[in-house]
Length: 184
Image (cartoon, rainbow, N blue to C red):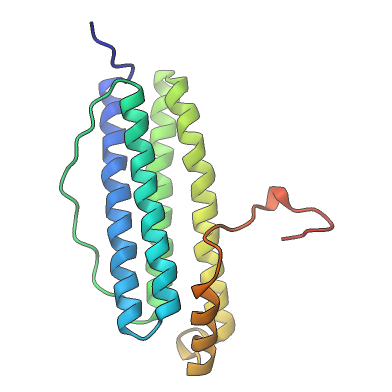
């Protein structure tokens, strides 16, 4: 008796997402190594923690495939892109990567909706919410870098940014949770 509750297309797109999350973990790991080599230990720590979060996302998709009776296909991943040239480039590449991942999540949502696979549609909503958080986090990094002076930031400003990110929370608050007493 076949107990797989996923269509071939849904199983394939979820397996593709497993690979994308593994690649994301490697990208953040790579950028963390680059940041450390540049002397940005705090930023490296932040990126290393984010790499772990991406791996957790990969595991979440894998667990869902298994819960639905599907088969996981572990494939080779691409090498991370070239090292950033500076922090601005690092954060811009990170933002582009998150936007690309959001697009991939939307493809899962759209396919699940088209197929009427409400379990997968519901499962993917967690990732939709997560991508809002991920994109917001990187936009805030870009804003903080802009405040420090962007590509022309002083060493002192970058030192302070590095120290801030070393201890920064990995999650950002949502606008929907804001109130008059706690605006952000």
